[in-house]
Length: 470
Image (cartoon, rainbow, N blue to C red; front, side, top):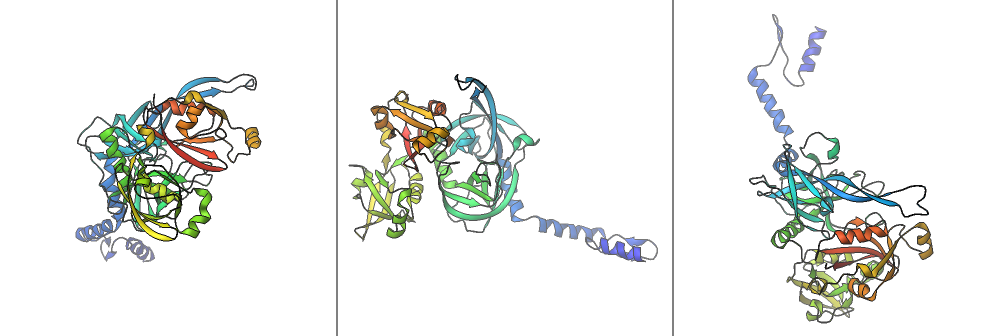
């Protein structure tokens, strides 16, 4: 009897235990068992399951092969220049299909300097990918594969995201360790919106107006979709914070680019092949003016270009920008975030304080002057050296790596805004670790493509947007 009672108790977790004097334990009726299984299946099918099922068929793995220079180090490097060789390097990331004719959105840093791109579908099929265009400033790129009738992701909006609502991150982390191509699914909540990530020694690039989530995002997830509980894509997974400051793994701080920005950039790339940066014709106080932001309740205009968009809109130096297109400005990063999503020709509504008096102004953005000016080659006028520990001490630099400008021609200085003593930290989103890398990165950029140089000047990290001709 004890054995029978124990069996009944254990079986009762999933089904009723019935007893018969002749047969002992009798299984529940088939209809009853089916009903119980149906109830369990319904409880298992959560919003996360539904969201993943809607998005996963259009998520792809991206493998990039690139040819990179490698210095051969030896015991005589102190006396001789190390020999350089080239080797193929593979890296991987994620993308998602937005048009049935094979158009895929991913991160620009996933496909940067790619010699070949292979796109793997969830069923394991591999297709050659072609880079349609890229925009390093927003970290968005468009890849196309030769296939039609592809499933596409449902698209949502990031503008109405609520702090604490469920989100799902899909991607292909650590693809080289896995033998199948189905995307990995992780879930979490929206931790914050409109996050501006400050530059640092590990990541001098600016990530602006980002969606923060605690859904696990690991190396290889870059370029994959972040979806809400309805299975609508609201962002592009782009970066993570790690315990060591690098990119070794997630500690619950992931960031995604708003889907509206990604779609705008992708649409412009598909239409014209590149992205036009909008110009406002004004500069604002940078990171050294933190106390001013708090005291004045906005950002101070430090320069207005004569006959530029801001000047024509009646904005002058010394004015304090309080709100732009309905967005409150707390610091210069909020202003940079607003500019990042402006089109050329957009009308911009500005609320400002001039002498403490509130005003409202409008300006119409134009093209960056560097994109319309006659192009000149400036590489010959730029002389850089690799930052070493000794150089860092000599020049009292904050950074321990990068390329120090030791000589620059007047032509190059006028064309770039750089000057002797600046330390180039990154070009687009590639960290600079040597003087040679500066030339390699600039030479690898496409003709007439806008790109961003981050550099240290007077102990602060700043940046400039440029277009080089060939």
